[in-house]
Length: 358
Image 1 (cartoon, rainbow, N blue to C red):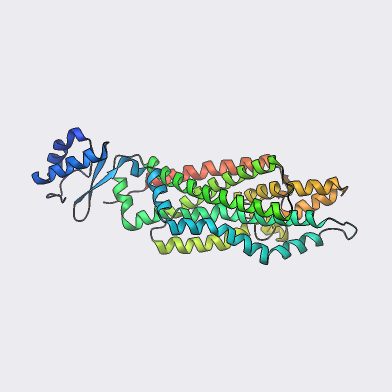
Image 2: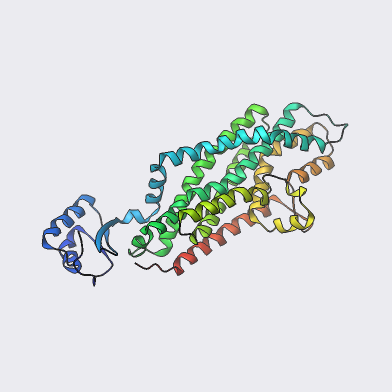
């Protein structure tokens, strides 16, 4: 259906009972009214009739489509992207084990006194914990950027304008993108966690049920952080090329600044102080603590002095310091939680202040 006049309201909330009224207000031709009535009967619930420029055609946007359900359905509809997202962590694990496994192993053994002899199982358990903590810390943020492509895609093809002129609160619409990205990212990251735990069980398992519980909590918080951060950055993007470029930069650089690829302790003192201001650093440390805590406890049970174990924790970034003061686990959780709330608040305010022209 095409509108015959341009001076009509932008959007109507249409029910099956008010079809004739909506048709008169929209100046729809008489022969198009039955079509509108059938559309209402078919949907069996209210929906928005949105007037779209420049050809003034009518488009039906269902109320549920402006909520997170639409975004989640579109993500899973692209089976190629979903499958690729699922197998990417497995590919990363193979690459990490192949190219970084020996590096981590040599780095760990070089920090041990020559007089100390540890079993191969403990060493593999520590190396495995360091490997999977690096993969998961990076994936929680980079996968969120990939999953959040729909917001930019909607801006590129004009869909966001259709949704914006519907009588839906701006905060509701912005949170729908956030929750959809959060849901899809969690599925992928939890699947990656399962793959990583399977690898650790093969090479050397020392994790307790409490470690596993807190590991999944760490993943949840880091995904919340990554989704909020990606939502803010993607808010300023409007083309597929821009999101691809930003995604490449994030994928390449985030692993270094969060301490996933290289321990922060190996950086210069000035750079360590700068990195200590970044919330993602504490997320990496939380994951690393809970993937390596069991193996470190086993080392202590074998009579290794606590001083040596603390030096190992320092070298592995299990212990983090803020201008010389050690940051405990509880403070790390608090920093990450406050950062998530602040980022979500900024994202909602940005969306409320944004104007879209139809």
